[in-house]
Length: 172
Image (cartoon, rainbow, N blue to C red; front, side, top):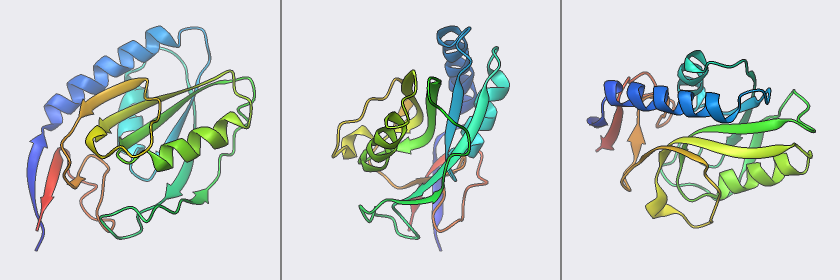
């Protein structure tokens, strides 16, 4: 049976999300940004984030996969859901739950840039920089976290644990 251990509480997460929302509202004032959530994990973070932003935003989602039901990335990225909104000439903010190796985010940024947006920036809630294998630009970071398999606040393991309101280490 998998057990979880809280490493960042829901209260600490909520405070940091509010700070990020304020920063993004300042930086994107009068820019009509489109926020692109990376499914499935980012949906909790993105919904909390946009409700706290003080500017109008548009949203879309993309779904990429490199994990399946494993704890280690396969290194092969699959597009499971494509963007529906044109982004040419738009200010794009990628909203990501977690970045570790950097391969998926690098792939996504390359795909987005080919569509000629005005800008592409990245906001990630959890940065596992100790596992980075590919350098990727991250413009807004919620938390730098340790090299452990984490779940909760939208992050899962085999579609379980997304419902947990805190960030937790998954212990076996």
